[in-house]
View 1: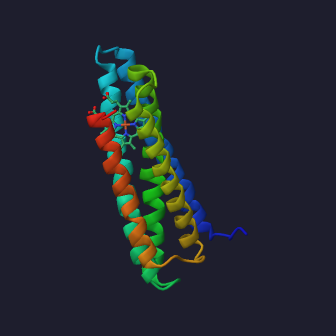
View 2: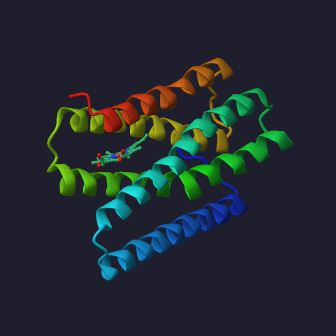
View 3: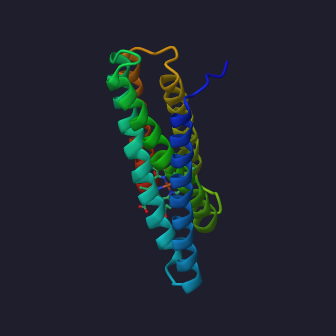
Length: 181
Ligand code: HEM
């Protein structure tokens, strides 16, 4: 069942999508300029932007479930609950979604250019990033459900979910830095 959203919320959603699109376009323009200038160390620039996108994505993945914990304790329809809705939507649409797309695109480019998709560490890393992406999808569904004042999970559930991105991030970073196999 789809829940009809108020006009102002739809307007804010369109604005958030526009800002996310602009962020992606600016980012792409920077990368194309660097490619056009053809520095010898283009791959290092790609890696730097990959890590920058990872930081932005992870900041959201660590903060959003914390917002859910507070939100699930706020009464539906209260001023506090409405404020959380705005914070959650902006964090997801403006920061997390574009950052995830950039992380994936540049990560796959590095995997192809530098490693021809070879290596146990790389395959394991990609598998863990797929899991991280599943968690991202669970979070974005929760943002929609909170926005519609739909059924809610408990604060305890979100406290547990809060740990998932942290654990995955630790394993992913160890895999890519140590490359143990
Ligand atoms: C499917 C998505 C991803 C792919 C295919 C991917 C692939 C790669 C590749 C091939 C490198 C270069 C490694 C090297 O030159 O030694 C790299 C660097 C890196 N990645 Fe990813 N990555 C992805 C997502 C992520 C995520 C989600 C994180 C963190 C949570 C992450 C963290 C890093 C870090 C910290 C580096 C820099 C490592 C270094 O140069 O020492 N990546 N990634």
